[in-house]
Length: 261
Image (cartoon, rainbow, N blue to C red):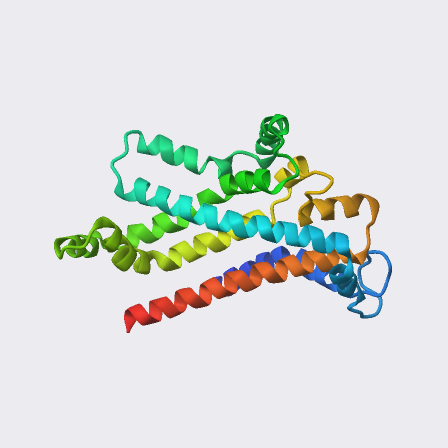
């Protein structure tokens, strides 16, 4: 009986968490020219408007460019940082680790104000470089955590065996360490992409008239042009996030199956 009540309670919590997303998805296919729930009729015209609108597409491609570069930079930096923190003998390692994951703890509004005050005099607001720097800083902690966890599970004796067999440090890393922690690196990269692509608070502060991310565009339309296109864009972002997370989960299970085999 206790398990039944526990399962029921868990189901209610999960339903409560997913309910807003389901409501947004349903509003994205309504025929009304304004956001309404329950939706009236059924149509995909709001998705068509999104993909045909040059402003929305410009903001989307700008966000994708930022997220792509951020993913590459954060994955490299975060992986190297995780190796140093897990395997290295750094003085003040705890302090360095705390600073590394600080962007996850510090409220984004504080980070956004600080970045704006720093970037504005340097001309880094509203352009690709400023966004990449800011989003990389926010995304690195995700990579450090996932890669660090993968390194904790990796047996260092395998790396030592490769070194004893004559491999250099780089050869041991690329041929032994990296293949074993690759699922963690890939997961960190996905988290970095999503952290950049979905980020809204910092983008609101450092966006410009031309350099505008999709999240900043959504904020503007909520204020001045509230139509079901907003719901359609939100649904697209949700589906992209689910697809990436599903891909990582499939890759993780295949890697575990190969390891067991």
